[in-house]
Length: 459
Image (cartoon, rainbow, N blue to C red; front, top):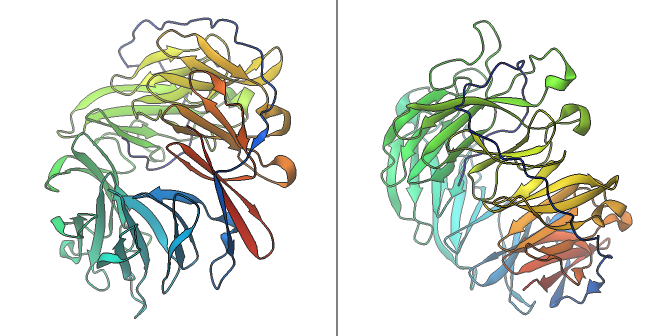
């Protein structure tokens, strides 16, 4: 897993890489099969219509799954749906809710009300997905987080006075709400990621001034580990010369390493944009493991630096980018070396430990091609999405891939489902994308007063 704290691109010239170099195997892919025709729309397994009610407006809501139920939230309402498309229960709360899932339990957060103090109190509840009953509740300060299978709640006593004992962070069992451990947090804290028994935590200062800290914790005890740095710095050192602005880019946690990156627009030419300087630290000791640079995108070709795209593979171990020719590249975050490089220019849209989905030109037409990382061969190719779509969004779910337009309007709302081994499925769900999970995809159709959610099984 990984901690993703920010997104952006950086510059900084093109000095020689300091990462230990390894041979990069560039493989020219085979000829992919011709693009199939668009699949016909399939009848959904079930549909349910919801009327706008009070603060609940369902036109932008999405379905998610928890404990054998499907859930949908809007405004101050949360509703559960059975596997056959019938409403199971409904809860209405005091104010708008934020919803997450941990260990099969629905975690709901909303404002508690009362005096207007900072940080304002929130109420965190664990709900049984079967019947909507409250299993436990607790008061929290803002920036609660559900990471892995744990709920993390910060609590600050009244207004902050910049003393260390003002704020604490607790790890709670999602099923019982029982506190596993509590630590002093140096102001309002947020757990941002977990991997290999390690947590990353950030803390915010009071007001606009002060330092933002990034640190690592032992997941079992909350004990402080070896990384504690200002978010503008890299393990105690700056990658840029003294006097230049200090900023941080995305941060990743994987394989026992915390990888931090520097982003700053200090380039002289447009071609040099979209670079990140990387430093990998041992997440437990803080020792530096490797240092290097990656080019995230070809600025001249893409006109942007991976805007709206995932930076890291679904397994958390590969960072997406391009080489100096604009060919797609996956960098192994364990050592900073190239894991795979494509044989032609393109942009990686998503991927996991075994495959990458690349947008590239085939016969002068934009096409999606899925490559096998171990062999470099193309499994399949499909140009249909680009005939009616613009920018694409993707969801990778086990052996299924869901592709849809990033901007859905008029007749441009379309969902396409792929089998990673074979390519497009024979049918596709109709409507606007409204969520996906293991073996299912949801869509919605909206009128002025109602929204109909439909669910299709994907096998």
